[in-house]
Image 1 (cartoon, rainbow, N blue to C red):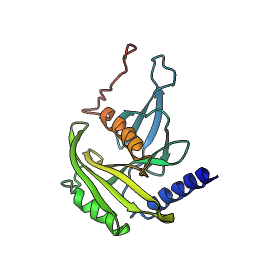
Image 2 (spheres, rainbow, N blue to C red):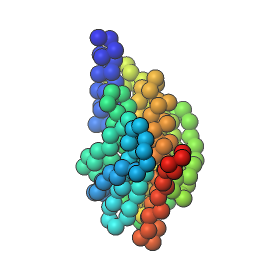
Image 3 (cartoon, rainbow, N blue to C red):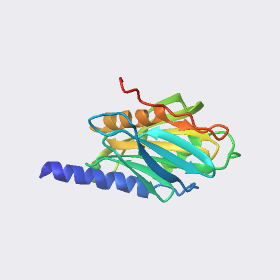
Image 4 (cartoon, rainbow, N blue to C red):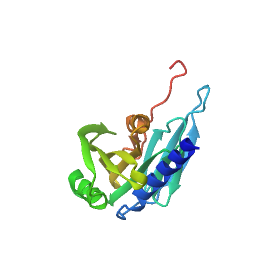
Length: 200
């Protein structure tokens, strides 16, 4: 019973954190899933996203479901103790230079007690991306952790988030890393995808 209550509190806390977000511009995604033609114990799916003539693709981490929720792509697990999202936060190729600090400050306005635990720069689909690890106390005194990564695309700025409680944060970080390392963007109308070798 305690375990069930704890998971329920985490689910509510995570849901509450997204309800507090400031609305942003979003593109309307078209989401399709394709199963990789490689024999595995658990099926491996590739997600294809299209919006405004642009195409994106990535592998879906095993154990997660992918949903298209009103302009935001959501990744959820059966236990509901972690969630990932992908959305466009500033639309248009002329959105200007990426100012990750601006979005971090906007997040802090909704969560005044949030603490930055790490800052980093990495590559995502041939673009530099800025990332942050943030921690704050949500409802029911549950500590939530979130990794957020911002990068540029032809649609505008993309925001990836991975949120969980402390115990599940390493797991959702690994899920996000899987998406980011396989994330591909079309160039000149052509999308070069990663394929899994039958011997891998």
